[in-house]
Length: 86
Image (cartoon, rainbow, N blue to C red; front, side, top):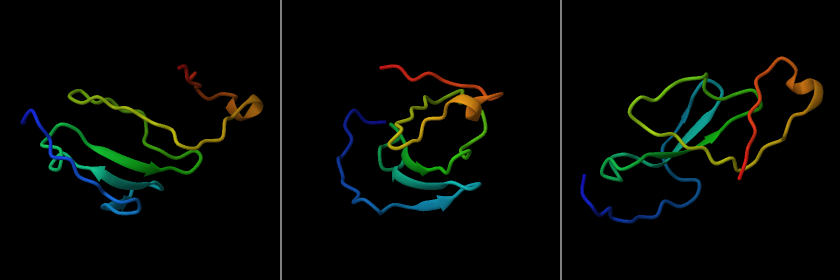
């Protein structure tokens, strides 16, 4: 991996997209495009969707939530909850 990565711009709505199990994944930056530095994708996930719990042993994973509807009360009964902090 080099110390410098060439910059580029991918217009919105472009990039390879794949349907996962109910989710739409659009590649924003691939490992090939960043010389292996990182990978970024936009995941369009319906309520209750998303990947099952998993572990990455060699990679870090970060999420940016762009839009969501918070759940409360009986909607969260019996499910695990996470608290977002700044």
